[in-house]
Amino acid sequence: MQTIHIEHLGEVELYFGLGIEIVTGLILGGLVGLDREQKMKNAGIKTNILICIGSTLYTSISYIIHNQHATLQNPGDPQRIAAQIVSGIGFLGAGAIMRDGGNVIGLTTAATIWVVAAIGVTIGFGYPLVATIFTLTILSVLRLLGPIYQGLEANKNHRYFHVEILSTGDIKSIIKEVVFNVTDRIDELHEEILNK
Image (cartoon, rainbow, N blue to C red):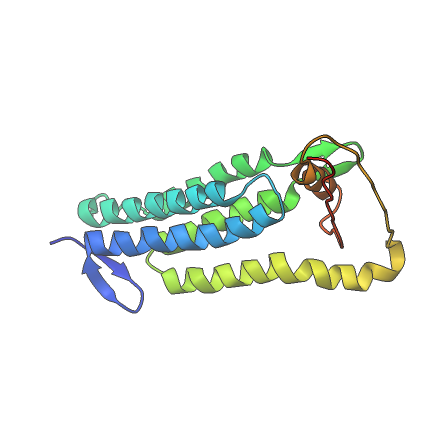
């Protein structure tokens, strides 16, 4: 019977262990993706889940193959796959970075893609609890650092805008997307539909 190592459980049956890793990758990638989706960013739930599960599986499979085929003459190195994940995800993250006039946008999205892959690699090596703690840390940074920073910067460049748009249809989601490309914060957003 083939086994795989999962922290705090030790050696478990291969398919059970892979199941734990895949479900953990699905949940943790989904949590980070949900945060990005709520902020209307490009890499949302599906993207982050796929990145996390993909890096989990690549790492797990490389570790399994190493354990099955390593010999004294050919010891192999399961960490080579993890190194390739880091560089490959770097290219994916680079695609999320864009220049908009004098501003560069997408840096946080690119960094999020990179750390979600790190979560997957951590799960793939058999450490889902460490990956969970790492995910909570990432979510804290994504959720709490912005408001703290905005609170410190509130007196410097705080500007209020009042925008009214007359439309024949529901455009609230379009307006949110346009505004979130410029800022991470909307204090109030009201919609009144007349004569629908």
